[in-house]
Image (cartoon, rainbow, N blue to C red; front, side, top):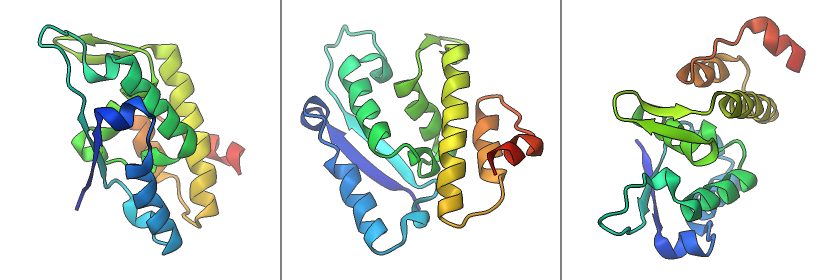
Length: 158
């Protein structure tokens, strides 16, 4: 079952992360943070002019909110609902990209390389701290972006 987090323009404008913090802090207190695995979906209410051609991930204020969120919870990709495309949308908030009508999001390749490796390092450490073994989650995350991480890579991280 997915958990929808509703974010409005006021929260974005004031960098108010409380809708996410409330959920995460409650689950951390109950030591149930791992129950969020692939559960979160963000619903953004950010009104735009009718003639504004930008995608939501191209709006600087929205991107800034996600940068602040990622700074607080760098392991958040673990919690995003990948099946619903939430990981790709989250990544678009943090990685420079362009939209192609026929191919969708086209990330800046070097920025995506850095993002995927950074998240792999962060999540590997976070999963280890939470006694979650195996690298299948990290491999699956990387594969969403076209990366194939070999087991020998993970031996470098141990």
